[in-house]
Length: 102
Image (tube, helix red, strand yellow):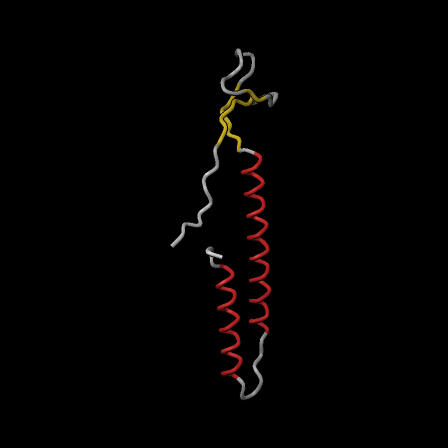
C-alpha cells in the first residue's frame, strides 16, 4: 500500500527580535536586540500546503452536502430497499473520494 503522508517540510532556523521584529540568520546579532529562535518554511512548501488545504476543504464541503441530502431523504412508500441501496452506493462513492490513494 503506497504511503500518502505529506512529507515534513524543511525548516529554516533564524533569529527574530522580540521588540522590533527584525530577522537574522544563521546567528543572532551583536546583542543590541533581544532575539528568540523562529522557524520558517520555504515558499514552495507553503504553497503546496495551502493547495492541499484547499483540496481538503473542497472535499469536506462535498461530503457535507451529501450528508445533508442523506439527512433530508425520505423514501417513498414501499421503496425502502431501493432507497437504502441508492444511499449505500452514494456512500461508497464518497468513501472512494476520501481514499488517499486517489
